[in-house]
Image (cartoon, rainbow, N blue to C red):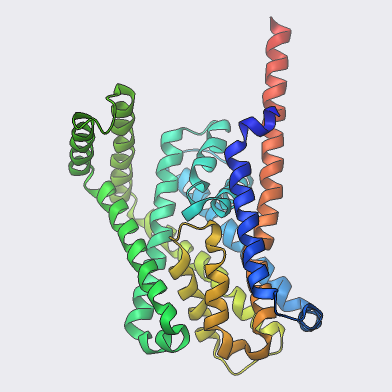
Length: 353
């Protein structure tokens, strides 16, 4: 009971995700012959699927490389295997929370338990988030400028989800960049905005809230300084992030080839998957569950043909659900080790007393 009380929020988020997944696959499979789908799945080449699984693991580990690289640039000693653990933990909590909002707080928590300063961790993860979103915005603009007719052909009426996703990502990146590069101006707006809400009695006056706001703005000022003084590092992070994103986009191509299909250019398959990622990234659904599957079924019908549903099951199964399971196991192990360390520390303290 104590475990449930302490982890009530996480348990509810996991239950919500499970219900969402069950509803999604019920809607997709209710009128299908499961035996036939199973037979088609068996025709997929294991070699291509293993390569796809390797790509999604590289996708997560690429973030680990970024975190490790930035920590070193800031003079903080940390081991790569620790950063890999942070990345898988972040992926797990991002998967079970709307708009991936839970990933970074969980990463900061585990980093702090390893002795890393919270301000440094926040700064590093902020840069990771900005570049991650910026790559999606870049991909979205390239697609809309150079491939707009193709997108309209494959998405149909669903293209408005792409416009929504682009708009939300642009707002997110712009907001973060303003916070980073104009911290003084932003600090004044937020401070006086908070005071206004308190005077209107919409919020109770709390010194702790104001202090927390000012401390948060100091973090953005630190990020601003970092961007100006570590331009080469930020450029390298951007390149690694582009590689990271395309590792995930290529999974659908691997699944396509696993069925022995051909005729659709690799670039088109990758771009269509990238479009789905841009469209669902900022939606308030864990992992874009439901919408991602629906867009896949709409956009890839001309690509996969009669193997559309098995293709979706494998593509999403590898790029999201398999990685979710791996991340869940590693997160549980990390939580168990943390609890054991805490217990041992308490035991040692008791012995000294």
